[in-house]
Length: 325
Image (cartoon, rainbow, N blue to C red; front, side, top):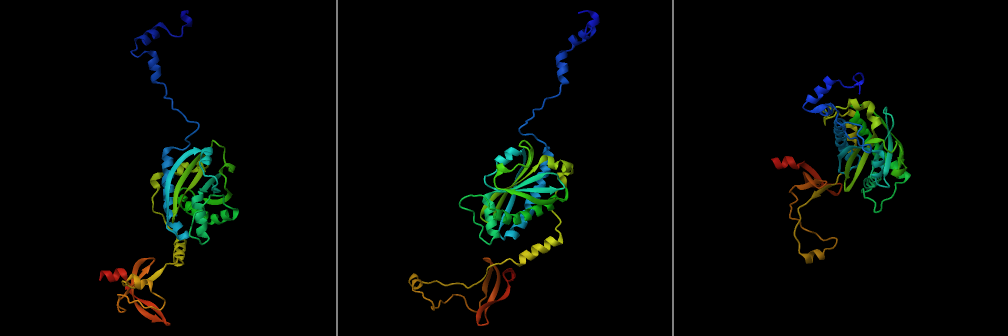
């Protein structure tokens, strides 16, 4: 190689040879670290934003835990399980078949999201809305169109609470735009599209099941900068109309009220021989207050009286007040 065509001069070569780490090491120190990328499980949203979404929907689950018992008149508990990113095809294959799937629009956000109720909770909810005890089905089947329409009344309660929780981020108009029972027949985005899947555990009386909300990541991109986990608190302002609605629902709730006399003991032979018309003598005096229980809980004391030729109880005070005297 001639001197005029040399890429490295003798002086530069001498400097490189005197370097303790050599040229290759020096070049390696400036090389950027290669970060592996999983194309099957891409992360479109940072961990900080995922934590913000978790806090937001944790507030939503607590709000729903208050609304559902009033709506269904049953002890209920809704708990947030997880918030994660996954491909749309993975979400679909993870759903039970059949199940209750509703596609929802969250305007002004562009696109469609999915709200899914597992059959183990969907059928008991429908049974309670129709006046039943909320019993699950013995054999799982797809919901009929009428059952899906009935279930939309329950979903309206869910979407209203969801809108309230999202108010600090954006005012949403959430509408149900479609329903399906077979997950494989639902196609709202491409199979590899990243979805933000939020899973809840529901317990309504004796029925237990899951509910999931899955939102395309592209749908959240316009508002992603608005998420700030430090701004979330569990306290929320309740509008007067909502308070009035809660009170009206409570006023129409029914409770079992019983007045109880202290009983007596009796021999088994006498118990077997009892017939209508026999008189049992109780150990409690007629002048002694009787216990008045509401749904099995002692709330009042009262006196036995007669009203319109019927036996009645006149309340004489609350149980807590009389016990503190």
